[in-house]
Image (tube, rainbow, N blue to C red; front, side, top):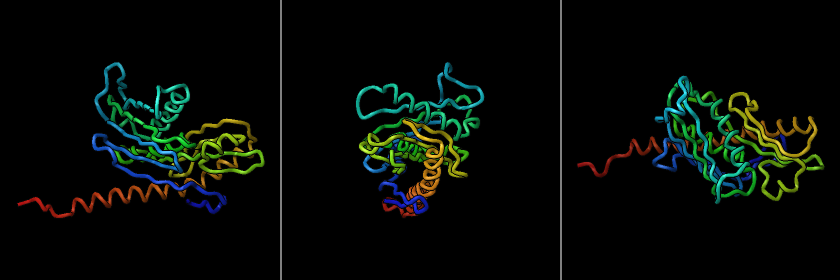
Length: 230
């Protein structure tokens, strides 16, 4: 469990791993608590003429739940994720192509949208796509007594007065997108934003360690002697 000292709050224990899928151009898994999402990026690749955009890449996001067909909530989450990806990836460098992001929910125990955002960011990094910045998702639960919890589990979400998910960039911790549910005051919103910005610093450190592990492993494999050569 990571501590956000300035806010006195805790991020649930989690993990990130890159390059899990061999057939994807980039992939990553992200776990926060018991919620786990696997993301895969395909492209830039050829795109159907009907979906072609002359000055930038076409971005498609597919969110697959544990079972059943996607509903209104999943489609809304897809739309939000696509907006963040389109605003982050330099799609103008790859006109007339497609970039497809597929997200598979492995386990949903709360804070799913934030976990999807984190898996998306890491998969884009793994794919080597040009980006303006990295981004992360932070979920907050606000309770009637004014207290806040980060990355709430399902039971905490049900007990909360309001739920908020923020997507922040790695450069200035600006809010790129947000999703809120419930009632809250403006001052409570600002408090949740400040807590999320503090937590984002810790989450980007986790990103850094995951990327370092990934490419340190690649460097070691590249420098290892070929024991099968003759």
